[in-house]
Image (cartoon, rainbow, N blue to C red; front, side):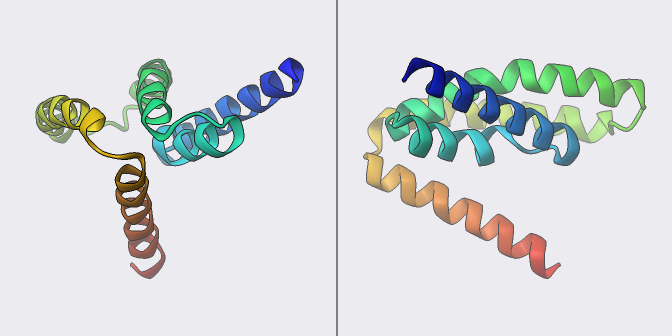
Length: 120
C-alpha cells in the first residue's frame, strides 16, 4: 500500500511540475483533485497541502522563466500585491467553508477557466 501511494504521489508531483512549467498552472488544477481523489485526503487539507507545494514549484519555474527573460515584472509585481492580500483572506476563509461548498466553488472556478480557454 505504501509503495502504491508513493508512486501516485510521485506521478502527481511530476504531472503538476510539468504542467506548471509548460502552462503556468498545475498546482491547484492538478494537485487539489489528485490529492483529494487519489489519496483520499479531505478537501481542506488537499487545498492547504497544495499551497505548500506551489512555493518550491513556482520558485524553480520562475528561475527558468527569468533565464529566458519572459516575465513581465511590471505586471507580476502589481498582481503579487493583490495575490498576497487575497491569499491571506482566502486562507482565513478556508476553515470556515464546508467541504461541499469548497468543492463546489473550486469546481465552478475550474469549469469557468476551462470554458473561457476553449472558446477564446
